Amino acid sequence: MEEEDSHRGLAYRLPANKVPRTLKYVAVDGRLVAESARIWRNRSGEIVLDRTHVMGVLNVTPDSFSDGGRYSAPEAAIQRALEISEQGASILDIGGESTRPGSAMVPAEEEWRRVDPVLQPVVRKIDIPISIDTRKPEIAEKALERGAAIVNDVSGLSDPRMVRVISRVRAGVVVMHMQGDPMTMQKAPQYADVVGEVRGFLAGRVEAALKDGVERHAIAVDPGVGFGKSVEHNLALLRNLDAIAALGHPVIVGVSRKSFIARLGGSERMEDRLAGSVAAATLAVAHGAHVIRAHDVAETVRAMRVADAILASRQDDGGL
Ligand code: HH2
Image (cartoon, rainbow, N blue to C red; front, top):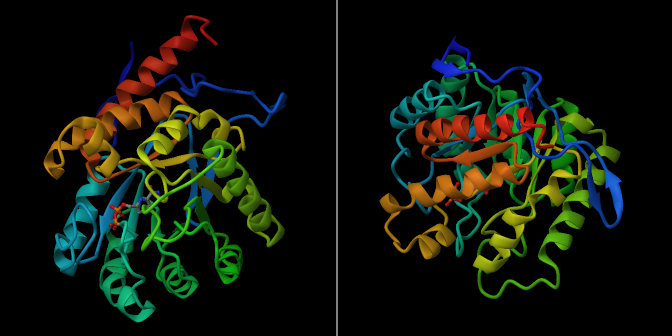
């Protein structure tokens, strides 16, 4: 076993030809579809999907469900951004609006007032790409002007102006699925076939983005765990992520500290949700996720290294 110094510290480096993904081609509706994504391009370069990447969460909000208020002061937020980068995240996701269940939309001026003082200093200080977690094209546009590289849109590009903002500057994008809107989405989420419907929605939004000039390799997809989904819906999506990965785009999954983790893990306390979050992330990766969005960056990065090594060793066995 070869151990190497990575710039984040000592880490086992997977041999380059051993991509720890579980699928190359998969059958969906009786036909073989695209190879699992290998790169994700953004404005500042590309992320090679030869290992699992962690997207570290930085909420500069007073009311986010797990860390609201903790990083609303710009100095605290900038400090946390540096930590997230040092802990091995591949992407920093900055958000100025909570989309937790029951939340109302924040006016654009207020959202920008929260993000603006943090974004530029952080762009200067860290070298990982920054994504802006927003549903508003005007926020995305300003953030991209200030150096963000990716737009993370939990509304799945519902505002047609968003696609133009992204394609104009060749930004990366996360297209996420949500049923309804944050205010009401958890009241009574309903699907006849949650996996098929989420996959169909994402495929449609990807097609629309491509038509409007967004580059294929810039588009990642996210099933939107907890966004208009019951515990059972979340479990079905996590178990069947390979059907989403078969779209041929990088798959992002955000399970970190979400309420289904509390329900299944047996404790509502925020500080008790780490183990369940890592368990869910690990299985998501085994089912085809490429990027894990997480609050607990150091722990998730370490766990994903182990998960990747196990998945890669399966290829050594001829297990594919
Ligand atoms: N989850 C949250 C926010 N943004 N983006 C993507 N792509 N995927 C997710 O699962 C996702 C997301 C919710 O988490 P958080 O940002 O911590 O909470 P809040 O919305 O309360 O700020």
